Image (cartoon, rainbow, N blue to C red):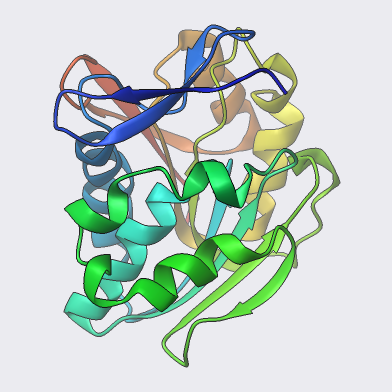
Length: 225
């Protein structure tokens, strides 16, 4: 992997820049701000209008920021969360420890949870009865899930021009099949071809306002019978 560069985004939170791919892991307009807008506000808070026990799949664990934001939301609202994350190229613990999320969020009071999120690259991590985390070190195309198992998918892979094999109709059909009726997939990507691939997989598409610096984002919904 190329030498990653630590970047301070506009909301003060860190992201990483991969010079080989010419891609940031998060929006330079604000990493935490982006994660809250797309994955928590448009995803998790929509799903929990109907249930308090949620199964989540994240495609692209990266820095673990979305997992941390989700854990904090669970603590604050009393959710029971079963979180699964697929990441074929996990970052080193040494690099992850340089990120400032723990200080900016509430993890300074829970340093063990912050460390535990990043200790293992694969397998189940014991974070208590109300939040379960399982990591998979493999490409999403090889990930096997039970049909209609997840309530919510955080689709946070690198952009389609960088990782085109992840944004295909076959991968979105895989996501559709593993979601419950009424389940939701949220992503920062608003590209026309990506949305067409989602529709071909069976999703209904909602175009939502994007976070600062991005005009639109996408929420895809599984049909209910």
